[in-house]
Image 1 (tube, rainbow, N blue to C red):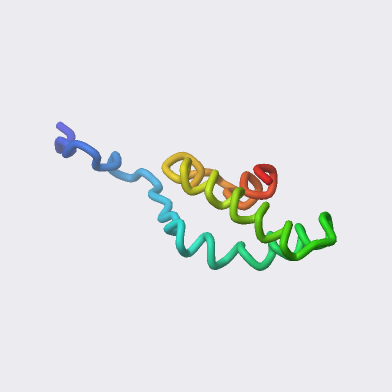
Image 2 (image 1 turned 90 degrees about the vertical axis):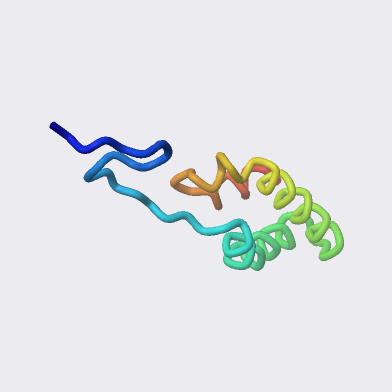
Length: 79
């Protein structure tokens, strides 16, 4: 007989992947996104506005995006 699991507990032997917090994700990705946007827009001000909107959209969906294999890919497509 297998031991019972508590609610919210992963199955025994399951691979549990620890995801970054949104703040860690933001710190890791902000410069890369800003540089890409500067190349695309040619404007620092516009790049800052677009980056802010993209991060806001990701934050609003972080419960799903944070568990993705490549949340940075989602961020860059969001802009």
